[in-house]
Length: 334
Image (cartoon, rainbow, N blue to C red):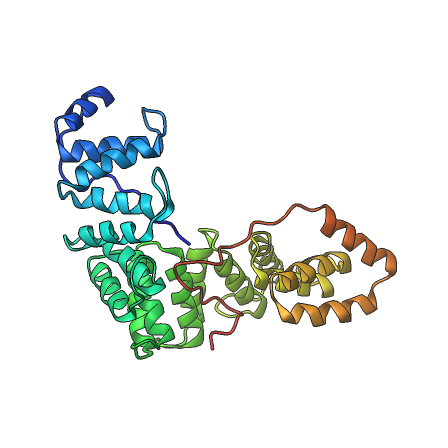
């Protein structure tokens, strides 16, 4: 899950001369100073990191109605930092900030309603919260709203055109998941005219931010010559980058190139390793490929692959609790 992040105060405040001056203002009851001091304790800037002290000062400011402090205190309750994890308390503080128009809190309330964290699960309220934050310009909320239009269900009619509208808004703000998903819509011609050149453009934007699904998607475009000149070597580079970050599609695709020597040297041992990793991550195709590949390998090659699998460190695995869907090729969207 992309975590709620503590935010510095949005409210205007005079810049303090130092931490001691800031603490003096905080003790005098100046809410923005309390929020700022708490922020410093949260990240250990100028003071030793102390989540409990951060929570104390956020609460002081939140009790005065400062929206940013309410949001920040909600984040601490959500993640159990300096306080006991309590989704109900998190939702209460997020709601208080959201009611004041705090867009990050509105987006977070969307997730709380969607997941049923600290509140009764309510998809209509989730959609309303996402929409409020999205219309206020929050990129993550725009992406979540687009996800709902893309998937449909739970009271939302599937609408690829609306999904494209909201993915674009988030993509133009630099959100990698939205860039990847906008690329997928262009590639499939869903909600937009099919345009592989545009698909490559947006996949590359996300891949340059090292989003594994986008790296795999961009690799697939190079492999098939869609929107770019066919280039197996570049395809292999992007597949490898995705594979090393735990993307099972990238692992499968890199294994497939290694098994036939396209873009990389012919290497059954490497193919066996990557198929195995993909299969362990849930790619069922890789199980069949492993059986076929094993028939071509010598016992010594299989042993070498097994030694590599035992010796190599665990790869970076993508989160299974992402706040936004990844619509990257070549996985099916249906």
